[in-house]
Amino acid sequence: MELFAVSGLINGFIAISFGILVIAKNWRERANQLFFLMTISLAVWSLGYWQWLSANEYDKALLWVRVLSIGSLFIPVFFFHWVITFLKRDGVNKIIALFSYLAAIVISFTVNTQFFIAGLEKKSFFNFWPNSGLAYDIYFSYIYVGLIIYSIFILVYSYYTYKEIDRRGQILFIIIGALLGFGGGLTNFPLWWGVNIPPYGNFLVATFPFLLGYSVIKYRLFNAKTIATELLVFFIAITLIVQTILADSLIQFVLKGIFALTFSILGYLMIRSVYREVEHKEKEIQHRKEVEKLNKQQESLIHVMNHQIKDYLGKAKNVFAELLAGDYGVLPGTAEPLLKGGLEQMTKGVDYVQGILRGASAVTGTLPYDMKLMDARQVAEAVITQEKPTAEEKGLSFESNIAADDYGIVGDAVQLGEVFKNLIANAVKYNTPNGSVKVDLRRENGKIIFSVKDTGLGVSDEDKPKLFTVGGMGKNSIKVNVEAAGFGLAFVKGVAEAHKGIAGYKPNDSGKGSTFFVDMPAGEAGLPVK
Picture 1 (cartoon, helix red, strand yellow):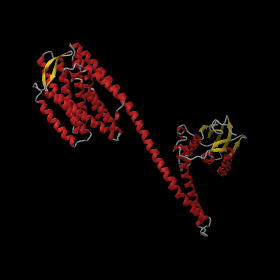
Picture 2 (cartoon, helix red, strand yellow):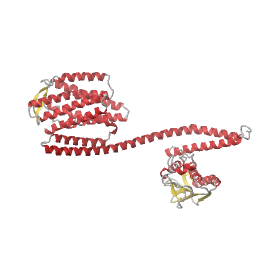
Picture 3 (cartoon, one colour):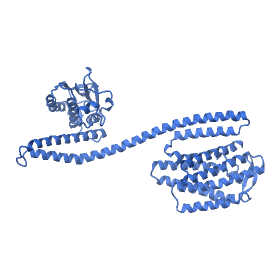
């Protein structure tokens, strides 16, 4: 019996604690005011419960049963009113709440009469357990059972109608708290009518203010690990405090008090550590959501660029080309240099936009491929022939080496050509004066490797993590080419991976310059080239 009495004391402490926490958050808010009144009613019931089961005399036990009954009358009413206020479901429910308050007040006047408590007698292992009167039966049927079932119905309905994940999580924990709390409290009723079922569920009542209060204060931190840690620490701390209060001597009071204080401090540190872990995870989740949102926005931008901007630039380029070709008659001599400059800049603009589109599409996996058996040698030779004059114009030494071998590969000739072109163009663009470019194509261990070696500025340790990423321009590359879009190597990586290969980089052994390469399986993965 003493254990059940202590459960009442624990429930009372927890109810008061969370009532204060919630009202302190914003005492002007109606929902918080109602929550506080509900926890005060729960505390009156719980502390009265503790004193009742601790009483050794009939009159004292009867007094505390009447005190706890006042608290129990108003717990369901305040809970119902709090639910409809919290969920903003007033209307007819406000009338029900008003009627429930009136019913509870009227019934409270019968608490000191036989209509509510028909006497106390020994039941199970309790010396003074009450018998119910007519008013008590009305209270149980309408206020406890009726209001609680209707409140949970409103909560469940709201859970399925709300779309916000945070709000639904909040409601879910209120439902769980209500089921545990009121379900546990329900086990106190059978003995009132002589049914020999002890109130073992009374130990669950403490979860009621805990989960409801938690849902109001920190519902965005709902996490199984957080809840479990806080429940464990809180219940142990409250139990230690209760044991301190019930100590038989001053020495025990001091020792148990020191132990309770020490545990509370360590428990607080443990909870704070769990909070940090949960907050970190929440930030990661939020970051992923933001990245997904940005990716969608990027895809939308790419779509606009692909269908609108590229079309506008292409038409403007054609206008310059047609004017220079004389399709609209002979132009003044002074106009030709201007038109050539316009055509050159427009061509750069078109290439720039196409580079961004190709790179973004390769990264997102939306770049279309025409995969078929092709000769990588022919593609490489065509790109080398196209890019070699540009290198020589810059005074660079250009060398190519293609070993005699079978370069059959299942791939997209156009996209692979753009990859080869990108690597060579970078080696030319970011090289040093009088430097060199060496292009190599070879087949090793069933793989085709295309590499470009330069004598440029190289890649700093700071810039290495940015390689092959969108917008991954290094400091040196920006100095050389301020117009760089940062999509080139990202495109190379995306295309290489689409061909079941890899794109990579390594510094030259001489310590000067870099070698960029793509490494792809010859033929179709697992199949020999015929």
